[in-house]
Amino acid sequence: MLVLAARRVVRPAARSPKFVAHLRRREALAVHLSARSKTTVQSTPPTSATPISSDKKEDDKEEGSSLAAAWAALPQEHRAGLGVVTAATAALNFSFGAIVPVLPQYALGLGLGSSGVGLVLAAPAFARVCLNSPFGRLADSRGRRPLMIFGEAAAACGVALTGLAPTATTMVAARLLVGAGGSAANAGSTAYVGDVTGLPKVQRHRGLILGVQSAATAGAWVLGPACGGVLAGLWGAPGSFAAMGGLAMACAGGYYALVPETLSLATKADEPSSSSSSLLNEPAQRTCLALNAVLHANYAAILAIMPLRCADVWVTAGPLEIGALFSAVSAVGVFGGPLAGKMSDRHGRAPVVCAGLGLAALGGGGLALADAVEPFTAAFFAWGFSVSVAGPALTALTNDVAPPSRRGESLALSRTAADGALCVAPVALGLLADLAGSTAAPFAVCSLATAASVGFLGTRASDLPSNVKS
Image (tube, rainbow, N blue to C red; front, side, top):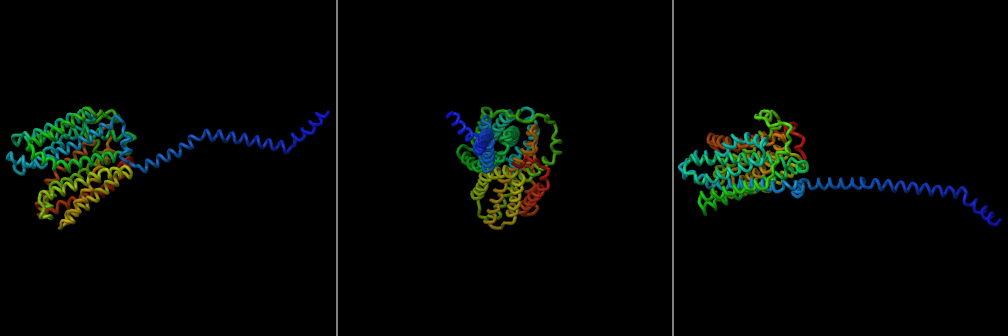
């Protein structure tokens, strides 16, 4: 009876409405918290992944095209190959620069006049103009490696044979061999670089990679003439040519040992045709051809007319002062190339090309108008920086518009336009200087043509593919 009484006392308390409601609220809260905990655990990975991905994108944006990021993006199997191609390109330009102080005097010693010296200097460019397109198509059909190896070896033999030439005829033949070998090596190496920098993770760094290569080439031209003069003084002209030929042959060995074939990376949807007409029908291709021609016409003006212009403005300057000025301006390209490449990766190729060519137009105008050493030097440095900016961005643009399955042929067309300008412009600008009776006239014409090319690129921007922007 006492137990029953106790139960009667306890049961109403246990089942009181307030108590039951309290228990139900606690149970509902527990169920809610449990479900929320499970949902949170399940959704944690994507929730935490989103900020990480966003941070990564922000880091990538801040890094832009840093050299470390570009190196990390390169596949392991192509790092050594790209390094060899960059070093070999610089070495070949170093050898060309090294023989510049030696070749004219050596050719005069064989009985050649001024016109004969001009023919010897122009022979490689003439060979490249004739052979660029055939070698470009061969790179698309047979591969990059064979052209790099055998082309570099042929150029090495041509450089060495130049120093052994007993007559003017054999010297011209040796220089033609240099041009033919260089054309083949360039067809393979530029297509290889285009293949590697066209990989999905590497393409956003293409401008920077090409800018570093441009800097290496500029550095080679800074050191080449000085080293060539030293070697000629130690070993004579034949010894200097033999040393440069040996350097080029070592580069051919580097191609053979370390550079892999990349033809399989190119899209093979369309086979390369035997004609370049279909490529020339594309507005973007024609734009790149015109811009390359204008840019290299500026190079030609500097090489052919600048020494004469220096003599007119800087009357007291001798060969040593003029050579030092040229080297200092070339050194600007060591810094301008990577900067321009990085900017083109971030902001697009066309704006950087326009900025570089626009500054080149101002520099050319300054060279034409300067009548004292100070403004002349400032204009020369402005021009040197401008072409170092325009060059890598334009090379990246040319790679961007090249169809992967016809990359070798497409890049060869732009090189042909550049080499054609180097063949024609020195003669045309020299004739203009003679007719005008002033060395300022060629620079005025170059300035106007370069300014016109900026406007031309602006009107053609809609023809460029969307991948010219990073």
